[in-house]
Length: 408
Image 1 (cartoon, rainbow, N blue to C red):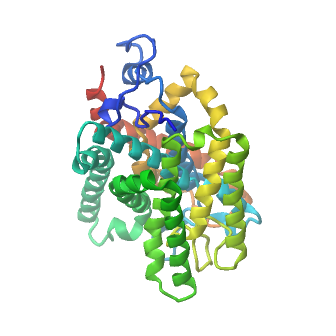
Image 2 (cartoon, rainbow, N blue to C red):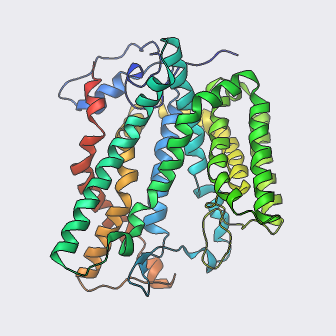
Image 3 (cartoon, rainbow, N blue to C red):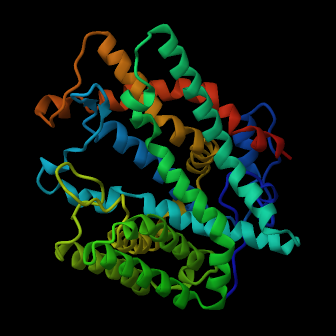
């Protein structure tokens, strides 16, 4: 089946390791009328799958809003910030996690992007090292800046106030995004091997991963081998990433609505069976008081969730394509993706800054989902949002140089 050559990173395709598609007849970048964003919007290849870009940006936004708005962030008895969610106290709220735990979608579109990048590198006769360098650079630069800044801040605080514990003690929540980025970095690096397996036998490659995920969970829950859970914390994401290859090679985009619905139904059935077994929690995020979390160590529940959400995405794709053909919405998508890594890396720091402001004016953090807590939710959307805007102004430049260098 023919492959649609597109790129998902919001830069000209040839800068991201993807063979550039023909550019539609649009005005050349309008200097001074929108700058970089308008340049990128105008340079959008005709064959680009804009839904991939939109879903990647949406995934980041949902994670950020969940951490800001739906976490009961407060100071525990040891003086450290902690951020449980209210799922254990709000009946039925767990079902929302089957839609709002959207990280599987991020890995699916990552599979699309990484396969596209590897194909382009191979077309030019490049090596795995060339592929890895291009894909990893955008991940590591924002992370490096983030860690360096926090190292300096930590030293300054401890020097100014001797006896103050390390940020790792009181503010570990700021590093929450890093474990996920570590998992994504791993799948980026193994994508060429996974893509080769997909080309040889797509269903067999996916099936082997699925069986391996289930087998490791059996070893963990039935045989008591806890290490298996940590192995699955990578393998489950490789499974979700592999689903994106079926999108990239054009297999699923040619399917009927019925077949797309069947994908969603099979994932939903898997979720029902797994959560009904008693081994897996119904929530797809960690919940206070539960010994097992589907997220970490990651379980087969997240693999089933990936299939379910992939099916929903396929069903929604035609409508999303029509929406993203509108310049305003596509421009918003381009803008978001241009600083996506900066947003994801710094959003918890923005929350910590907001908490500092809140406490500095004498207000208290609530530790239960009371009526007052729910009434404050809009505040915890706006206040961290303002802090994040300041952080973006300071640090987005470390994500943007490669984009600026790629202007026509």
